[in-house]
Image (cartoon, rainbow, N blue to C red; front, side, top):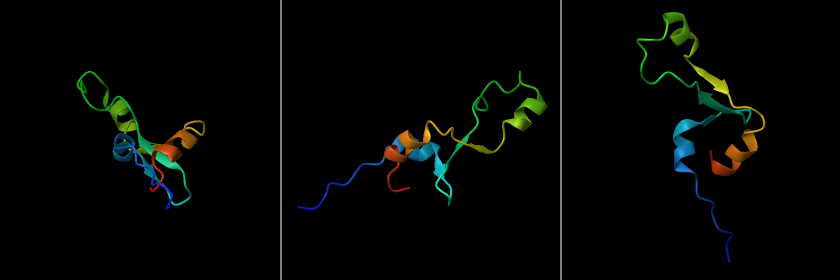
Length: 67
């Protein structure tokens, strides 16, 4: 019998992206709403993506087996 396939965690698939080297990227938090009370420099620093912490990477690798 063939080995069972693992399901991808769809919530994680929408939030994380894997790089060519195998690291995971995430977007920064606190940039979704109530932006009028945040300073322009703070909002500017929240742009872009950052690498996920090393301790969280194995958990994400299990959630996203085919990404």
